[in-house]
Length: 282
Image (tube, rainbow, N blue to C red; front, side, top):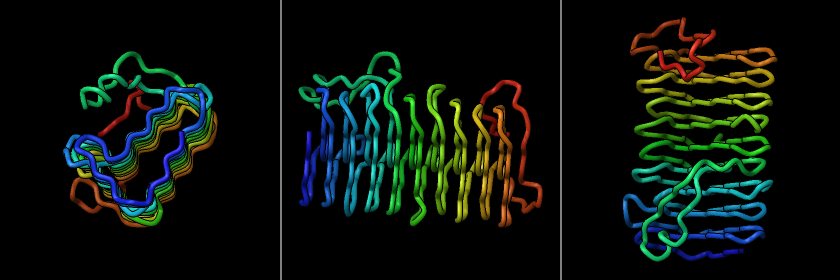
C-alpha cells in the first residue's frame, strides 16, 4: 500500500488512514497539512500487518500521528518534517506490536478501537521529528515489542506532553538498543525510558528537560549499559534518575544547572536500585 499526497487533508475522525492487513509494505508520504476536526481523532492513522511501514509527513499534523506495526519482522519508521499537535492524545504514537485494530468498527462505525492481547511483533522502531511535537497525553510515545532497536530523534525543536511525559520510550524483552536524542522536552515527566531488552540504552538532551511533577529524566535498563547526557534538567522529584540492572557500565553527565521541587540544588541526581523494579517518581 502506497499513499502519496501533497494537498491538505481534513477528516472528522481521521485525516489520513492507511490500513494494510496484507503481507506487503506500507508507505505514506504526505507533504500537506493533515487535520482531524474531532479532539479525539487522528491526524494520521497507520496500521500494518505486513512488511516494513514508513510514514513521512510534511508541514503539519493535527490531531497527532498514530502508527501500529504488527508485521512479524517488519520495521516501523515515522518522520515528521512539520509540527505535530496531538489534541487530547499523543503527538506521535508509535508501536511495534500492541493490540489489534478493530478494522471493521473503525471503517464502518467511525470509531477507532483496539482490542485483544498485546502482540509481540516487529523489528526496528524509528521516530524522527524535525518540528515541534505536542500532545495532550505524551508528546512522543514509543513502544517496541519487536526484535530490533528503538530510536527517537527530536533534536531541532521542542517536544511537550501534558498529562504524561514529554518523551516516553520502552523496549520489551526481545528488543535491543534504545536511544533518545532530543533538545527541549517538557511534560508531567520530561524523558522516561525503560529498556527491558538486551541492548544499550542512551539518553541525550541538549536543551532544558522539565518534569513538572515527575522526574526530569528517568532511565532504567536491564540491558548492556546506560548513558545519560544532559544540559539543564528540572524535576518535580529527581532531576535525573538512572538505574542500571543490566551488565554494562552506567554514565551520567549533566552540564547544566537543575531544579528540584522548585528549589535550586546541586544534588538533582539519583542512581540506585529500585527493589520493586518499577519506575520510580520519588
